[in-house]
Length: 452
Image (cartoon, rainbow, N blue to C red; front, side):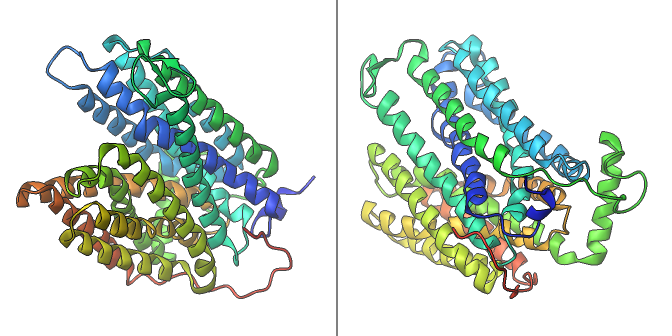
């Protein structure tokens, strides 16, 4: 059996890299089906359609997801720190993944009845919080499945697996359970009564996640338990939940004194990552209202956008390893700004397909290289803590793109002006990033390295 120590900073082999990437492939079921395209739409348009009172179901949805985000923001740094300190990174990933899957399975019991809205919102909030927290130990594993020379391409491979997994599952769900009209939908002819077709989609998604999350549990060894406490007393492993915040504050002060660029990168990435999320969040709205894309073609554009983002992540991963992640992020953000400016002046579906896809091709590289940037800066053994902070800062800035999008539309009185708000967020993230020194290139030759 492989010693866990051998997996830190050394090549893990293609099998382990692939097993790690399969978690991204499977987890796309929660992002794509539950949050983005299917279950939240079912909650607001069907389950909560006749909700009594003055507060709409969509408002309750926003509040529930906001509460989940608050929980994540408060707990992600100390949980990541604790995963590292007690060497329970893989166990934490397994437990949190199980919580998400159980929440998804329970969503089957959310019937098309406004009285079930509260059950659906509760399960969605629990699943969302657990899912984001699960990404902390998962991203921290990047160092265990890559070498300093391959961290960029391995990170890009993971992002691409997530994109393709979401596309593949959405196509299965759409053609199998949703497409068509009438009381029976999809190629399987599933009844729509009481939301059965959507509830079955949720079950399929839960099984999908469970199946593809298993390989990483068996292929990647657990982290070795650290020796003497890395600093101070009480140590991170013995501090308890509230004491962990004191340890976190101590470590942040040390990080600020030792390498302030990590702190500045966390700030910059929080801003530009929110801009990247805004591109996909508001892309469909702009496509229909501004550029005249037919409703039926929006899903096709979404699939195409995910494909080019995935291909971009894979291709840019190799440049990341050669020239560094900062260059990849800067080039991606500048290219997105240029495409966004073009979208401000062009019109019609054809132009949106051209410049919209050109813009999204740079989303994947920026996301993947942001993860590899941080893993290159993270002190060995503290990757979980760094990605906990990465998650928290991202949450703290998640209001920027939606707020500026809406503000721009309101100020200029046109939906097209929402693009300005997104460009401002991307540009602000770029400006904060530019002074941050990138990780030093690594030129050592490693005998065996994972190739993806």
